[in-house]
Amino acid sequence: MSAHISSHRDGFGAGFTVITLADAPDNPSAIGLAVLRLAAGETFAMSPRAETAWLLMNGAIAGKAGELEFEFERSSLFDESASCVHVAAGTHVRIEAQRESELTVYECANRRAFAPRVFKPGQVAN
Image (cartoon, rainbow, N blue to C red; front, side, top):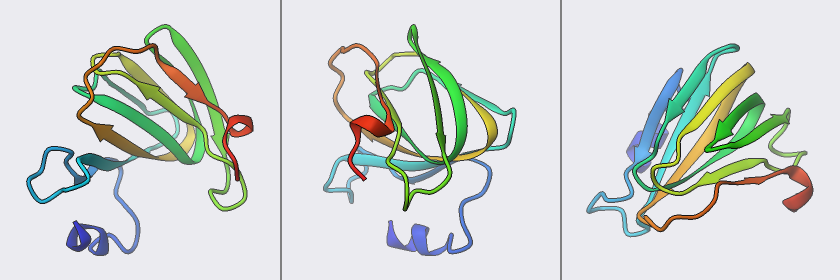
């Protein structure tokens, strides 16, 4: 994992970049980590195989998780609290970038069903 991160010192490329897989034998945390970079107007959609959360690092996005709509904006990960969409395995998620945006994506092996959730800055401490 550290070799992969250090090879991206100038940032991650466009699209979905896997850093570590939740079920990798050398990953004792059992948490998958990826980075999703979208250009303005670009859409990303998927139904994850396990519990997954998308945390907006910077940019502006809108979308839908199941039937739950969301819209987030963040200019600084250092000065503003995070926004996040969190879903159970199999929940369809669509994210559209309203401007260039970067998200971190977290996956864990939980396959229990639960309603999609959205966390906005007022619910997350700085």
